[in-house]
Image (cartoon, rainbow, N blue to C red; front, side, top):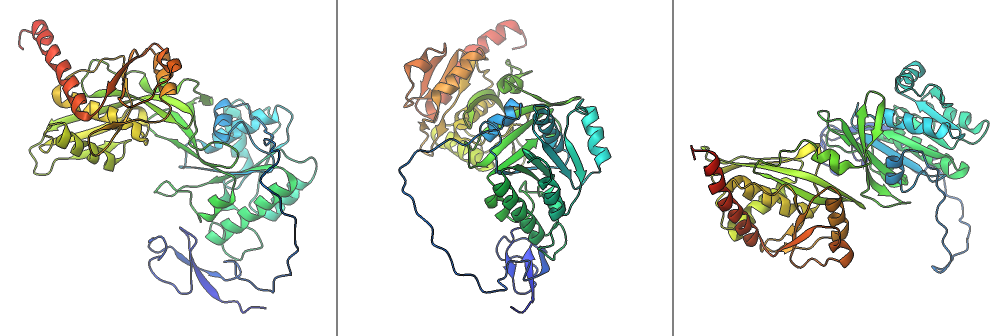
Length: 471
């Protein structure tokens, strides 16, 4: 038997240190090392048994698609790749109060009404609180089995009795504890050991298990990153408290595509699915104001049209401000530098504010061209046509580079009434995409973009002067 000694485990990344120190050497987090026993940290306490040889197979062979259990929520099934896979384990993360429990109780009720056995284990709320939420959502009649428990061994023993559950929800994994680890609940060792026990149960019984995880202030799932590697899918439930919509995003999925999103709207009766999120993000936009451009973006395999707003104003400060919401700060700095170097604009004495309307976050490079158009429009005062959209990546040389899935972007734009699209000049567009009713306007570099918007501004000034005698 190996001698037991104390080790120090980082509660942020799971790194193990032999002595306490103020800062973790692996992730750089301060005051995150907690003393735990080496048995819980995964130390070997006995000699390993001799291995048994097994048969190896080749790459050739027939592959069968994994069976699916549809939840009945189309947006949820889209993100998971068509529904739950029996025997899989999913990790759902999100900020407190964003609606994770509401989403899961709706999925559980829909699945239970179809005749499947569903078990909902709450480690944070009492059964009465879960019942109150179900009653508020008009789901009290759904045959979902509830329990308030935190002991993993008791939960697995209960689920083993009777028919095999099709779905088991653990809310949340940070509240679970197992006798296999000696640490307190919520520590890295307990989270990892509890997740391993639940993962083993899912693989041996075929039940699908959904683990709810808290997130840190940086937006990462709290606990060791090794839990994310253990599970089959990692889903994040995102949203802004100032807006009603919520987005379910898959950052990892062994049985489907990553990058997919499902859009929900928070209502008085729970989360309602949004079949056309582009119309939601564009609702209420002021098409007659300068500094606004619509980007035809992509989230996974779903096209989305969102509005990018820019405000460029002169500043009296020595250092101009650069404020960004929903867009990458470094990409904005690059676009501003390219506009100055290759577009002939002088932005060094202007404050720049960039915002993605609706609380959405535009991460893909295809939004570069729309952001540049919004900046030029705000600086020159030119109003972009309301039926025009943009997509394209801007390089450091000023060239506009092609992006993926142009056909899907154009078809989505044509469906929402857009008649013009500014695209990279080298973009390959199929005949099917050209038949979407959208006129293609190629753009080779940012210089051409600035020149075309400047011509729009020149044409608008005489018309504004005729309407307003003060001009």
